[in-house]
Each structure stands twice: as C-alpha cells, then as structure tokens.
Image (cartoon, rainbow, N blue to C red; front, side, top):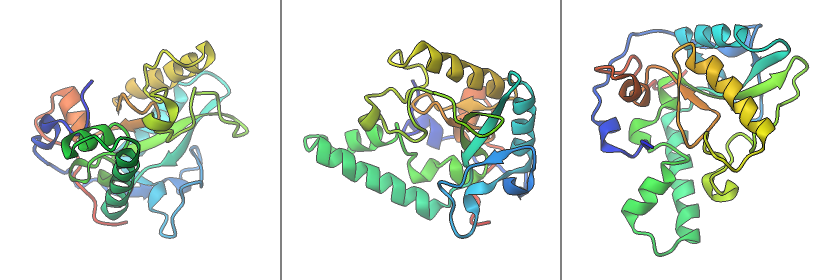
Length: 214
C-alpha cells in the first residue's frame, strides 16, 4: 500500500492544464451533500474534466443508484488544519510514536498538506445512494478514520459485511472505469490528475496543481 507520505509522491513534478473549476451544484445530474458545506461553497467545486468523469461513472451504475458527492475542493489552509488535528489525535492515543511515525500514520487518513489531492480540484469524496438520496451501506461512514473504525475504512478491509463489500465494489468499478484512482485507506476518496494519480498511472507529471481559491 502506497501512502501519501511516501517520498515518491512528493517527487512527482507538478503540471497543470489550466482546466477550470466548476460548481457541482450547477450540474443537475449530480447529487451534492451539504454536510461539509463551507460559506464559500468550495466543497462543491471540481475540475471540469473530473466532473464529466463523474457523470460518465454515474451512467455506468446499476439502475436505481447514484453518486452522492460529499466533498471535492478543499483549500490548503483547511487541509493543513485537518492534518494537524489528526496528528494531535494520534499523538494523544499513541504517546510513544515519534514524529515520523505520526506523520506516516496521519497520512492514512489526511493527506500531508504538501501533496494534498483535494487542493488540486481533482479529488472527490463520495458514496452511493438511491434515487431518493438514501445512502447505501458501505461498511463505515464517509470520513471514518482508521483509528475510529479499526481500519474498516480501508477500501479492501475484510472487516465489513458482504453487502458493504458489494457496494464498495460497485463504486470502485464505476469510478476506476472512467480513470479515477482510489486512495486505499479511504474507500470514498477518488482522484484524477493529482500526484497520487500520477504515481498510480505512471504519468510524468500531474495534470492539476494546487488551486489557491475558488
């Protein structure tokens, strides 16, 4: 399992196509959840090409199912806050861990700010729901941490029900089929064009770099 703390990730060259960000709330075919909404609406913004890939993935889902977007773009300031907060939580739970161990373990749940996928606008956290918005059983809630879920949040975790495993497989098939890659410690986290995507697809550089603001 390659984590976002891996030096191979930060070594990948940054490129950017200049592709615009769009507001997913203006894409009627997609369902956007508001649980992580911010005043600026940053959470609902995504690169235009990735939004199109989500539409293609949704069309590949079994009848009666839809994607439910939880969070897309995340400003670097917020990413840094999330990372530091989770490091503090781990430090309290494991006072014997040194700084390097804390950094590595925290990266299983929150990306280190210097390689943050969400800040490129090419990454999205999402789940599956029915046509009327009822979320499917995915084994854990979206954003369940490894610490709180005993690693059941890992995409390939054997510690989820057969029903949840089937739903994860449906989500994975649809999203990988349109070119997105999953971060294996978070079943809900999928990206395109960022450094993690570049490593997994052996691209020479990223398609998207950090976006300052929306």
